[in-house]
Figure 1 (cartoon, rainbow, N blue to C red):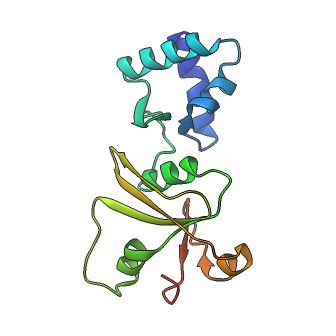
Figure 2 (tube, helix red, strand yellow):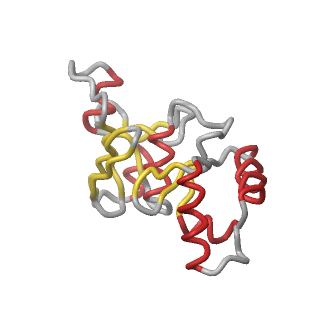
Length: 156
């Protein structure tokens, strides 16, 4: 991948609203590159500032016009793609005004995937695993037009 090709492809995906990519995503966007060539190309794009490393294996296109204030949620959604994820615990309770603490540098997310904590340039993402059935999860989360849904106040 060369710089111009990368700008063209990343800008095209930005127009579709996508600016957070895993290394696997980038491999699909640049299918001609072999794995070693892809990693070297990605490292070069990071050095040149065309990509920003959010955490291990996850990259952001910093010139994206579709980037908004919910970038940390986009990162969380990408980290646990294919799982049910929703904002809960301290983050949700703070948004509802149920607790006085405001988690400035942390996003707490419940997930059906594995637990874990990730430090990103946008703050820390803390995943907590839940064993609740999907049917129960869906009934107690709200879609408020942002990347991740949020737990109802009673569940949070």
